[in-house]
Length: 462
Image (cartoon, rainbow, N blue to C red; front, side):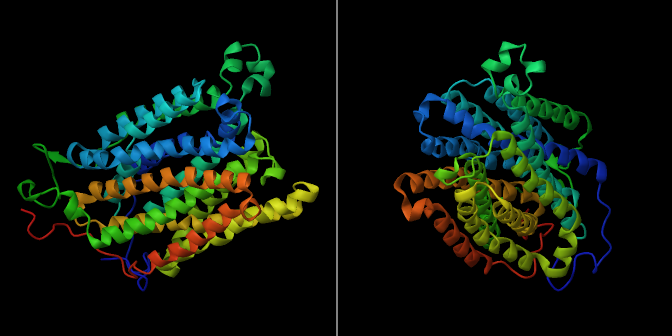
């Protein structure tokens, strides 16, 4: 039975119990990705500023920091579809293990990098080897059904929020331990030579332990009999759809809306640490890396708590489409609050009005984060068949990787251009992002009120 706006998820049928232990392992593995992406945010701008590439000009940091933040998604965009399709054929688990190994190597390399080129190679390595996001979404779709999909999918943004909480905290607190903890780390010259290695090593350790946990305990969700997936359809009748048949109109609609949401989110996330770090006279707030980590962590913490406790009742009450539309609507005031925070801090420094605006932005972000659960549900229901779920998620993740590659470098570069050229008082970037947010609402008009159904078998799949 399909989910719909008029038929609340849990009111219409008894929910199937979730496979808790397998979901725990899956979500534990998923946590590795937000940790690896978010841990660098508190110190990346300071790290780039310390390299000779900027020439000591603080206004140029946005160009180079944004590129570093985008590189993972640039390289992932070229490979994630192949990883998703491969997981349909060889299984989800082998692909996931390769991804975790890639993240481990990347974080170790990033922590030991002493040049901008080495940082670039490290981030590219993670993107090329890691296709886990799409694979995890496919496994979540296979571990749930229409009666418990909202509960299952709601957990994925919660995990991302946990990573967005813990990652910045680790990056902010453990950066430069030689100076921050002289009694413990000040005795070792290594930590002076590599001031940002410790947070990277901590995350690398998490990735390798996740690798071992998945290797031993995670069960494959794609079952095989003589090399073919086994399910309700006899093996001889199963056909993996080519890409042109997976790209149905409903897949295009679902993926397009998901991509717009992801673009706005990653642009906002890239602007936040830059805005927090830069001096007030340059349009920021002048926070130190530990304070940046605490602020970013607070956003993730409260968003995760909200998703874990409130999302399902809200989803049941308002339905998929209404919840998603409200999520997109929140971006306009969120981007508009950045210049207001800087204005409040220009005369007397960061004050109560600044913190009030930041709190409002955090509340709006929490509401926005519900949109990702809705987007995942739309993508899952748009799949042409259950045997193309990996390819469908691969297409979605390819598009998400592309927009997440463009988002940070576009928003932070526009931030720097706005400052250097003094465009609209240095705030052109926020005007542009508000306009893009408004235009993104057009795409939501094409989303259905009643979710699509995923057929067990496509006609003619013989």
